[in-house]
Image 1 (tube, rainbow, N blue to C red):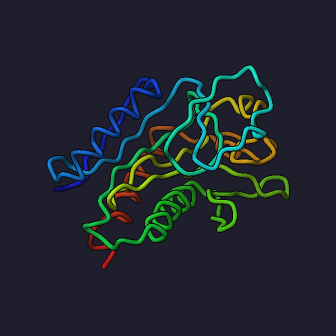
Image 2: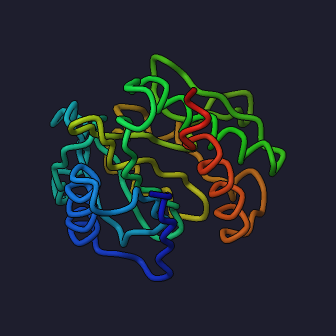
Length: 210
């Protein structure tokens, strides 16, 4: 089966998205549905991964949804690109590190197309770029694997309001370490998705693993 590419125009409620994602996960595990790459946005919501720490919440009034993905706490809001994936590593190499590297390379290659240099960091998972002589995080990655099928995915700050990060330690970091694409270049959201889609489908293709 080929990978289905899904793009939602309006923001999707977080719990609804995760419910759909988990249903697709079950179907991919049972080989009754295609794998999935889903581009979407969320209304403002704070989510916490499996390595989340209560001390990462600076504003105790916010509501935080605990999730099954890896990583710590983050904020999603309109203008931030979310990419959820359901990818069957049974059809590729059962290598989670390679899968994450392929996600990282897809984001890095896409940013490069728009003349933005970036890099990954083994100690601080995600994608980083230099701004005012300081390394800042532009994309976060958090996945979960069940029976060698991956789900959840990554987020890229494009035009979202970064003020929500002031209420938390995003990914355990100082909020000043977070940056959005619009701070670096005026990029059209739809054009960015088009390039990212091509890079993801190439890097996640079965043939790329062998």
